[in-house]
Image (cartoon, rainbow, N blue to C red; front, side):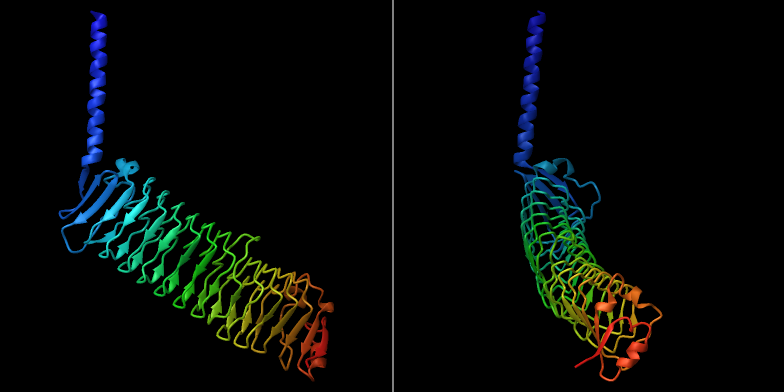
Length: 386
């Protein structure tokens, strides 16, 4: 009797498991539906999450840590947004580990913050021209994202938009974009090339931080602001081959640690060169400072160990500390002041750890004795310019 009851119990358990399995498979096959609003629904069927609305234009809700489909996130392989959906809410599709494709309608105008954050299986995304705004970190940590086609209606690449997209090798930014915000491509370690359009007016701090394989980039002449250290690359990395833009000022540390920078033309629109701007640009051999520049700040060329010559215009009225510190190859400096620029600093604090007695200072003809009498400049080998 006990054995018979035991067999019946086992059969009952098997039956329950079978019913559960059938129910689970039916749920996957026939789908599960969530009501997002009176007119918008989300349906998960056969690993496809479909968002649709009966309105001509309706925005999805914003989310924090919980979405209606959170418990089903492993089963979402594809997302289809139907016509009428006008906004993807903040974090709406974040942390979907098996998401591989997204279909976006022409009705969409905005992608919210963190919308696809950490969708590690997403490999490609095409954003239609109807989209004008992509929120901060919208595609951050999409580690396998390799192909991105951006909307030609975008104006700004927001903070951290593609940060941590380690497989992204190249991207073309459309002509509609004027501003790239901080950390937009931070940690894109496979990025080797990027095309910046002539519409770009500002590149902000840390934009390409950690892009260790980005070897060259052309900054268009439209750029008027280069933010604090937008490149911030490891010392062994190379970036920026040439720049001849229209910036009004070059911010603190803008090209710092760009160790393969060999040639730079500073446009005559620049009035200020910030501290640390070219610090540790060890391949830079010469520089011409335009006569629009009024001041050069601390450590601007510090550690430029290949810099051999500098031309300083007579427009300069301020020299910061340690501007040429450790510029051990510096041999020629040309200045154009009819009277020596006076400084409260000593030459040692401007040319720190440099043998000034071995540097030839070219001065305007007829001013040699003035420079030889000046306590700041007399430490150089003074000759008249030809």
